[in-house]
Amino acid sequence: MKWKNISVTDSAGQVLFEGPFNELPVKEDYIIEKSTELYSEPEPCIIYRTHILKKLYLDLMDQFEGKPKKGMSIDLGLCPDLTDHLDLSGQGKSLEIL
Image (cartoon, rainbow, N blue to C red; front, side, top):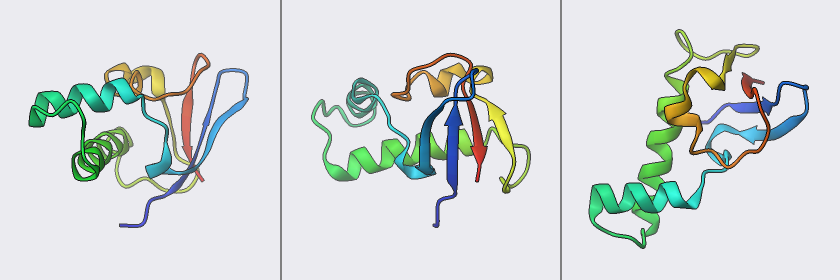
């Protein structure tokens, strides 16, 4: 699967992240929590880590209506159950497909 390039900006328009979707920074606490929950393993191996991250990224992609295309964007404030796990500072974040 080829991941789309994205840009995450705050409400002031400052870029918080720009790059491939699958490189969005995720909080380590979340990865450990999910690894423990799913696999009873507090020190996730690369396979568990990859599965957890891919699932989060795909769930974020599902927030777009239809197939994500260039120029589409979503307000990350509308899906805090997913975006609270991203390791990005700033308020009023939005994600745009580049």
